[in-house]
Length: 124
Image 1: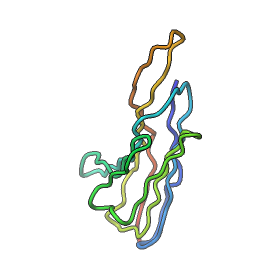
Image 2 (image 1 turned 90 degrees about the vertical axis):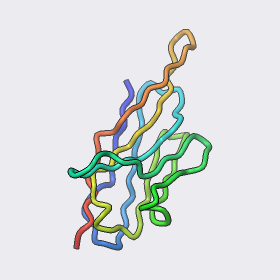
Image 3 (image 1 turned 45 degrees about the horizontal axis):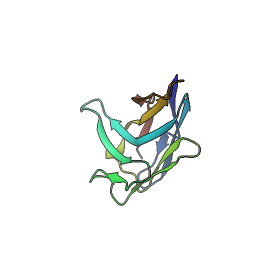
């Protein structure tokens, strides 16, 4: 009943910029943590950036100073602004969100959802 849809991936030259967006839809009461992960064929999925609701963003060392995560709680969206992109940033990027849903009797359930992934390729 909850879906995360990513957009904004593509091909960009080194030093360029991309902005990824993720929109959550469905039966959502609220969203706690939202984050971006990335995965390459040769390694597992790694955390790129995360931000709790109303909290301080956290970034992987490899992207600090270049990437910025932001969220709009009124629209249930999270974005990742990626600047000064490097070939090493090439990966499939996944949106992640901890979503709180509410039942008709006012009971709450916390569930982690993943987007389908969007390809980011940095190459000259």
